[in-house]
Image (cartoon, rainbow, N blue to C red; front, side, top):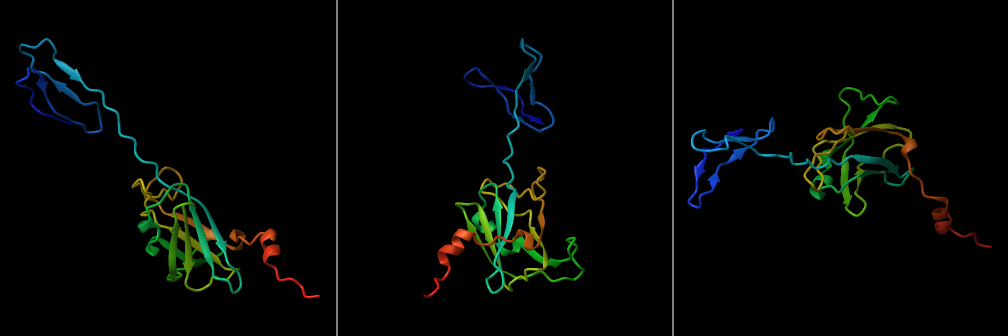
Length: 189
């Protein structure tokens, strides 16, 4: 903490500056001679830190000849430039327990599209991902929310940590039966 020297202004008021060091309440001492007050305590409240965004869900769409898309939903608005940067995401083939073999090359991510209305990022990998494969999906902790806070990938209040999830066909989203009925071709009688 730094306290500037106390000075009496032309208006007769006592002027001083206090800089907080975040360890204790700032305190300014008055010169002991000629003053009835020897100490001034200034109440200081920490500035609340912005809440870090987290990943709510990861879903996969696309089977067979359909393009694979991975949809990440966040609990807060993300910075579009950060969310659409493909370098903030890694997809790598893994085993059923999520282990990645050494020297395994990541899958190329062709595009990352951000939808601000739903706080979702849709990842489009360059090759389609086989439905029976296991994939480790990593979202880097350098991803930022619109409030400037880094991603809390761990979900435990630790900004700047990576989100990591194992993706398999259990995370596949298929069209609902209602949608299938509405687009199904009619039989010719």
